[in-house]
Image (cartoon, rainbow over all chains, first blue to last red; front, side, top):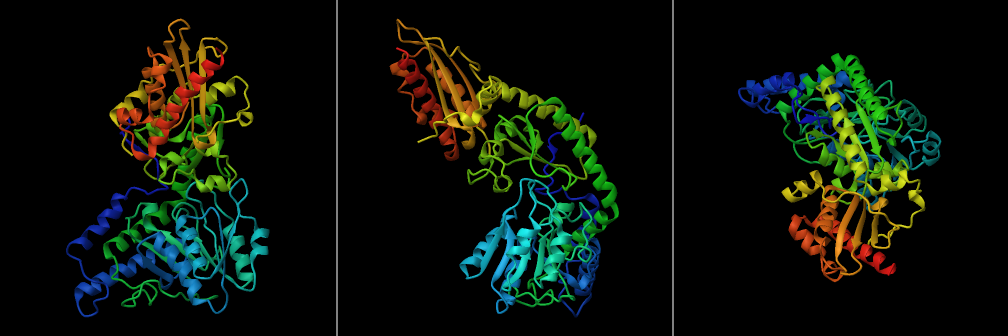
Length: 406
Length: 126
């Protein structure tokens, strides 16, 4: 019998790996020092732990430890990357390029900069979720100072061609930032092979603690400079002031080490479970639609629309399983997912989407249970759905004149 | 979001799910909402021509749990009422009965609209 509830929302966050917790514990008690204290053992101990964590995080992404700036998490990393470049290179240019399916931490930061006088191009994506390289090439001007394109999308798991985007940016002498939060620890990610200048990373997405992240900032070819967004004691080579969160950095490092060692095997396992889930659902239910490209996709991601079944009602029926929906009803804004909209998924289907995020600790038994429950509830709700009834009667739902609320 | 016990009960055991023959002169059908908005309710009533009393009601709903509960409750409430009585059911009564939070008030509005649409469809036939 599987243990309930089942957690299958690993794009939101991941559970802390017990091995990570173990390495963190001493830094909450005996080794409580401030890494900036230069005159005593407590400080040295903390500094050593931070430097160890820095090495481990750097190794996971193929960086030099001196290129790692610790932050409070991915939102801060994204803010520092985009605002830091914008303000540092303002004399050189005022134009930034990003894309419509980015995380809000990028989109809202860019909108903030627009109010400050910068110009931002929000590139569209195709119906698979990809940015077009020609669109990107055409958007670059002599005033472009930054391109920010995420590596893997948090909703649909689609993986952009980061290597080519990085190459293009380098050819044109434009800095390239990628929000690699969903990708790092899940798929191979190397800043040098992929021509990345700046990258956002977060511990909580690969079995590390919450409240800690990093920004990779390239030191040479090209050397990237950032204007800090937090002023203070000049920690992290002046780029991010604030006492370092030592226990979390220790955990972040350990999580990175585990991810690096187990990545290829774990990624294959997540892919196997994801495919099992997808194939079981597709065998048992009709009218399922995969959102985003299926091939270039995070191994643990399945984002699927269950036509004629509203997402929140489906979640309510599978309330012993933790997953997410792109339905408006599950968000505060009452708007369905902007990512699905950007992919051209109609609002009717966006309301029926569910995101499954398979992770390290999910098992075959859990996948079987989830598939069984989803199939059962989708069938029940379709029996309850006037849209399913109409579709079965052969009525084209697009041709119906819907009387929308006044 | 936490659902009230009554919403959960209607979601798990929806009352009067199904369909009545649309062409029947004594059946009125209301179809409200839109798939793009995430809510579509179909509510049907069967009216006794002599007494004007709603003898039966059925529904099918595409929407969140609160939308399903609102329409399920609506079918329970209209049964046994005259058309005039059924028209007095207000969305605020549904909100109160199901303890709907502010973001779900639109579900109750839709249920009230569905009742009215079904009655008006019946009246069109007479």
